Amino acid sequence: MKTLVLGSTSVFRKAILEKLNLDFICDKPEIDETPLPNEQPVQLVERLAIEKARKVATGHSDALIIGSDQVAVHQGEILGKPGSQENAIKQLLRFSGDKVTFLTSLCLYDSVTDTYDVIVEPFYVFFRELTHSQVAAYIEAELPLNCAGSFKSEGLGICLFERLQGEDPNALIGLPLIRLTKMLEKHGVDVLALQK
Image (cartoon, rainbow, N blue to C red; front, side, top):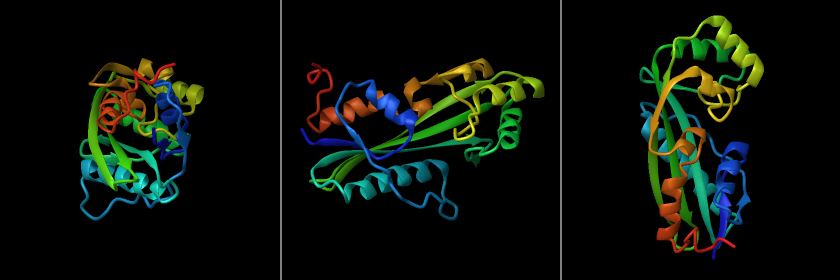
């Protein structure tokens, strides 16, 4: 089997990939993630997943490389990571009683054949009505300042939601495993057959 490389230093993506019980290494893709002029959210995350995988491939000549990216979209606007408690509170109050779409891209790049498969997986988060004090308490408790959308759905953030809608809950955290498993199989990696 080719070396499996996760083109990410995200602890969340690493933890998700570990669920498959496969040997893999992580490598940091150094790319510019600035959106291009008039680039739509789906185009942005797809492009970034491909660029990340290709960048990491330069250091791995015989590997399958996983690239991924995610954006949160609210009312047509791409939202970045909050970076501060103040910004996180503003984001969550903005989402109160509304829907946010998370777009997670996944690229599986074969460095031998210079080919890839890429998809963008949508996931919808419906927020309940939230008060300022609830949002402030949540941000203080979990400090999700490096998370798109200002929450961690795998933790206390679940209390912010009315409901969730999507094909794969892992996509919301950052890596759609159902689609990844299918992509790996297409490249000759049967995840279940490789279990010890």
